[in-house]
Structure formats: C-alpha cells, structure tokens
Length: 530
Ligand code: B12
Ligand code: SF4
Image 1: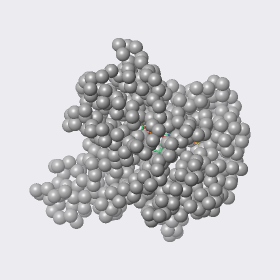
Image 2: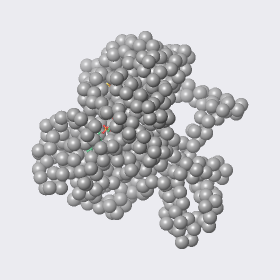
Image 3: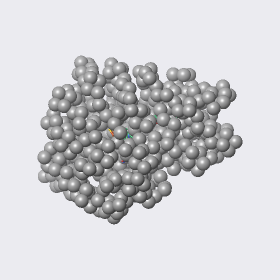
Image 4: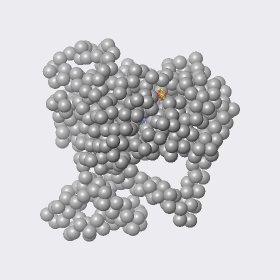
C-alpha cells in the first residue's frame, strides 16, 4: 500500500521544527515494507493545488495528516481535498487534538475515514496492514470511524512497552535542509510520557504517566547520525521533561561526552528537578538552553493547576541552570483559573524579577483550553468561560477565556505589555548593534536571515526558480549572482543582502546546482517539496 503523510502548516512564531510524529510513523511503515512519502507544509506554503499535484504524481491509497488544535481546520480541509480528488483514498487523521475529539471530528468532517487516537506507531501499522489485506477495522485498538452512520470507537491501545523497538525516525523523507536554512534545530526524543498532572497539558494523555525511556546509547547513535548525515549542529530534545529521571539524563549526557559529539542542544525541563550536578553535566555535554514551564507568578494558581512547584522552586531552578552557564527560557500562561488583575501583576513582577536577577528570557501565552485536558473538561467548575468554538482561535495568542475575576481585555493588556517589552528589547538590540556590539549584531543577522528564508519558503520563490524552465548559468558563480538578483527582485530587497544569504545557503551545502543542457538549475540539497 502507498501512503502519503502530510504535516499541517502553522505560523513562523511557533517555530517550525521537523515533525517527529510523521518521521516515526513513516519509519514504522518503511520497516514493515510499505511505501511512504511525506508532504511537509511546515516549510512550504500550503496550497490545495500542491496536495492535488502530489496525489496526481504519487497516487497514494491512504493519506494520513497530523495536526494540533490550532491547525486542525486546515488538516481537515486537506483531507477533504484528498477525498474529493479520489473518493477511494482512505483518509486518516491523528495527533494531540483529534485524539480527544474523535466524535466531533468524524461528525464535522465526514470525509475523514479514520481517527487514530493517542500513540500512533503500532496502531497505524495495524490499520495499513488491515486495509491492505481487506480486513475489518473493528479489531484495531485505538481508532474511531463511522460504520453506516454509526460511530465506532475501538478499545484503547496499550502504550508500546519497549520504545527501543521503534526504528529511528525517517528523516530522509523530510526536507531537512529547509529547517537548517531557517536555523532550526533537529528534534529528538529520548523518552515518552510525563508523570506530572498539570491540568492544562495533554502530553501525558498521549504518551502516558509512566515514562518510558530509550536506551541512551541508541539516543546518542541517533544524534550522531543526525550530525553526520544531515549536518545539524543543533538538537532540540523534545521529551516532556528531559530531567525527570536523573540516571537517564546523566547517561545521555555522559554518552554524548564519551563520544565527543560537540553538539549544541536544548531541552524542556522542570525547575524542581534541576541540581547543580545535573546542570553542570548538561552544560558540559552541550546543552545551551533549558526551557521551563513556570506558568504563573501566583502561588495559588500554581496549586490550582497542579504544577507541583512553588516560586522558590523556580528561583532555585533557574539559578542552578544559569549558574551552570545555560540560557534559560521560562514560559507563562495568562488566563489560568483564578486569574485576576492582581495575579497578572504578580506574574509580571515575577518574570521581571527572574529576568533581572538571573538573565532569564521569558514568554507569555494566553490560555487555550485544549481538549483532553482536565482544564477543558472541568472549565465550568474552575470558573473558566470559553468564548470561542473555532479551534483556529486556540493558538494561545488571543484572549478566548475569562475567569470570574479576569476579562479578556485584562488578558490582552498583559500580552500588550509583554509585546511592548519585546519591542523595547529589539530597539535596544538594534542600538547596541549600531554601536558595534558583536552579540547584538549576530542576533540581528539571525533574525534577518530567518525572515528571509521564511519569505523564500512561504512565497514559493526558490521552488519557482528551481523548475526545469528556470535555467541559470553559464557558470556557478554567475548562476549564484543571477539567483540572488532574481530573488531580490521578487522580495524587493537589495541585491547585496540577498547575495549574502544565497552565499550562506551555497556554502552550507543547503542548495546546490544541477547541470542542465543550457546551464544549471538550483535545487534544495534534499527531497523536493512541490
Ligand atoms: C516539540 C513540541 C513543540 C515544538 C514543535 C512542534 C512540532 N512541529 O513538532 C514547538 C516548541 C514549536 C511547539 C509549539 C507548540 N506546541 Co507543542 N509540543 C511539542 C512536544 C513537547 C513534542 C512534540 C513531539 O514531537 N512529540 C513526539 C511525537 C512522536 O509525538 P506526537 O506528535 O504526539 O505523535 C504521535 C501521536 O500523537 C500520533 N500521531 C500524531 N500525528 C499523527 C498522524 C497520523 C496520521 C497518525 C496515524 C498518528 C499520529 O502518533 C505519533 C507517534 O506515536 C509536545 C508534547 C508531546 N509530548 O508530544 C507539545 C505539544 C504537541 N504542543 C502543544 C502546543 C499547545 C503547542 C503550541 C500551541 C504552544 C503554544 N503556542 O502555546 C505550539 C503550536 C505549534 C504547532 N502548531 O505545532 C500541545 C498540543 C495540544 C493540542 N491539542 O494542540 C502538546 C501536546 C503539549 C501540551 N501542552 O499539551 N511544540
Ligand atoms: S506541563 Fe510539562 S510537567 Fe506538566 S504535565 Fe505537561 S509535560 Fe508534564
């Protein structure tokens, strides 16, 4: 059976990272002998014609799409495009939104044939195998579908016990050079699950409360492969909490050191499980940044959301991490149960405090109550009123909730305040850069470069220029100058700015020339995306 997997677009602010979900699913398919391709809309502009073109070329018998809450509507739309193109295509959706909304999804989007709920690796293989052999769906645990108008939800799927049995993610099917061009890290997971019970989070409902750890040797084999074969020097460990089990975290770090990997990485962690020893080891092993969920500067809210930490834990945790020499990023949520003018002020002054004392960077998001979370299920009891039923509004950037003591305007004011701070920080960076501060110059260049590559990807500029008719030449140096000139024209940017960017892409081997009869044609270094 031929399978096409599609990742759903989301905005640049959400940092497009290589989609591990699809890479794991594709690896499972390949190792079971099925044919699979990935269409990755995180790094190319989504247009329905691109989906149709892919269907035309590849003729998949099954299309599977991944999404989160905020881009669910787009994922459903893509599957409608597939069904309309060929009603014989089996349409499947999975991920941390539909896992908790199978009924609504199947009712709202009747062109979706199957919802895969929770951990998908084994379920998906069974599904594809069953469809391939003409068997019945009832026997497959962990899915929902409609049978003659009746919704069928099968029994839940037990979690995979030995996650070392999973093949390495099939990154060769993902256009990794585009992520590299954007300066994004490569994602790796060393464990699945989270033992904590934060009421706003869906993570443990997908991968369970009992954390399953990968063999550190295999993890580092994978990282080594990413470094060697793909050239990434930046890794993001996306475990829910990398620091949850010290022996595991120690072994991963020690193995990185033993093999002298010399790679930079970042990880999600909790303030209450940082120790001086672990932080020092992480730093030595290449960890440049830890990301802590702090959520609120109000002790009572931290209790209500079952975060299991106090503000003193935060002070201690961030101090340990910054003392060890790592950058620290803390995220906060505005609009949690019990939020009021006073609690918002506490969050503002607490984030300011850890910024001043420890140099912590931080971000604010609005509460988006996500299906599958205790907060969503018990919103009424928790005094949360939700003002939108359009999932596209659940992007954590707009005020869609009120508490008994917080209006949406108050939440918006807090975010405006934060955005003003960000703007001031950028003004400061620009001023410092103008005065020759090397660190700020590098920050500005990085921002400019991300913006440039994102425009290239989202405007399809580079891809248009890579079509067979867009021949450039007659020699590589001139081809490069021509490419830069053409892009500068399309983006209305000065030639020299674009030349610098194009030079970098060529030097890093992310784009290359393919000889043609009349000159050369440019191409991304890896698998093309339409
Ligand atoms: C890394 C990460 C990010 C990264 C990158 C996301 C990316 N593109 O990969 C960054 C930091 C950018 C990010 C941003 C955000 N994230 Co995030 N993120 C994660 C994290 C920690 C790991 C994701 C991951 O790679 N997991 C590993 C893979 C293998 O697991 P998986 O994606 O769940 O896939 C498995 C199953 O779900 C299923 N499956 C998934 N898709 C499909 C498709 C098919 C066809 C099938 C059959 C099965 C299937 O099978 C897979 C293999 O078992 C998760 C938490 C978690 N533990 O998953 C949160 C998580 C996905 N993020 C979440 C959220 C809310 C966000 C933000 C909205 C945050 C914000 N702004 O406040 C943004 C939204 C960005 C977006 N649109 O994705 C939520 C999503 C919940 C929801 N219902 O939407 C999660 C679950 C965490 C939580 N708080 O509950 N995130
Ligand atoms: S917010 Fe972090 S610690 Fe809390 S349940 Fe989710 S993944 Fe676990």
